[in-house]
Amino acid sequence: MIAFWIAAAGLSAATAGLVLRGAARARPVDDAQARLEPHRRRLAEVERLAIDGLLAQTELKAARAEAGRGLLAAADQAETWARDGATPRKAVVIAVGAACVAAVGLYVAVGKPEMADQPYAKRVAEWKAADPSTLEPAKIAAVLEGVAAERPTDPEPLAFLAKARAAAGDLPGAEAALRKAVRLAPKRGDLWSLLGETFVMESKGQVGADAKLAFGEALRVAPNDIRARYYLGRGKVADGDVAGGVADWRALAASLPANDPGRAALAQEIAQVEASGRLPSDQQAANENPQVQGMIAGMVEGLAARLAQSPDDPDGWVRLVRAYAVLGESAKRDAALASATARFKDQPKVLSALRQAADTPPQKITTP
Image (tube, rainbow, N blue to C red; front, top):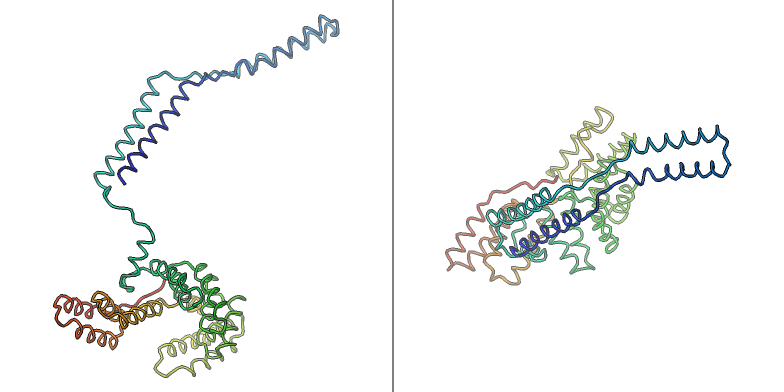
C-alpha cells in the first residue's frame, strides 16, 4: 500500500512539472497583430481603389476615416499577455512537490500503510461467518446476494435479500429481488404481498395500481394473506370508500387470534378512521419495511441447521445462542445452550462464552 502512495505522489509531481514546463515554453499570447490586420487590409484596399480611380474624392475621405476609426478601436482593445519569469514557476513546482511529500508523510504517520488490501469477496465471507444479529442490513444484503447467486432457482434467498435491501434503504433493489422471486414461485402469496408492500414503500405510503395488482395476485393464490388484506382495505379508505375499507379491516381483525398484537393495533386504526373519516396523517401505510426481524430469524435458523449437521463448532454455537437471545427466542436459546453445554462440557472457555451469549438482552430490530 505504501508503494502505491509513493508512486501516486511521484506521478502527481511529475505531471505538475510537465504542465508547468509546457507553460514555460509557450510563446506569449499577443493578439494585437491579429486584431489590427483586418483593418490594415481594409485601409490598403481603400488606397488601392483610390489609385485605380474607382473612388471619388468624397468617398475616399469617408472610406479612409471609417478604416482609420476601426484601426484605432482595434488598437485600443489589443492586449499582450506576457509570460512570467522562471522564479514563480519554480515556486509552484516546489509547492506541488512539498504537498505530495507531506501527504505521503501524513499517511505514514497516521494511516496504516502496512494493512493488506481487503477484497470485497473476503469481507463478504467474513460477514457470512459473523453473528447475523451483529450485522447491518447492507452487509446482510451482501451476504444474501451471494446465497441467491448460488441458488438461482430458489426464491427464499431472494425474499430475504429483498427484506435486507429494504432495511438498508434500497427499495428499488428490494423490488428487483422480489420480481425475480415471484417469477420463480408465482404461487407464493407471501412473495406477492411483499412485492406489493415494497411498491407501497416506494410510493411513500400510497397503495397505487402496481401495489393493488400485486396484492390482488397474493389473494388469488393465498386468500387469507394478512398483509394483502390490510393494504387493500387501506387503499379503499384512501380512495374514499371508507365504509368498504373499514369492513375489510373488521373482517381481517376478526380472523386474527385474540392474543395477536396486530389485532389491537388494527382496532385502534379502525377507530381513528371512523372518527375522522380518513386515514390518520401520521400513519403512512403502516409504513414498516419488510420485517428485518424475520430475515435475521431465517438466517439464524440456517445457522442452526448447519450446526445440526456439523455440531463441532463452538464459535457457531456461541453465535446461535446469542442470536436467539437477541431475537428474544428464550426457549430456543435455552435449548441451544443446553445442547452446546453438553457437547463442550470439558471446555471452560467455551462454556463461559456460551453463558455470556445467553445473557445478551433481547433487542427490538427496527426498520428505517
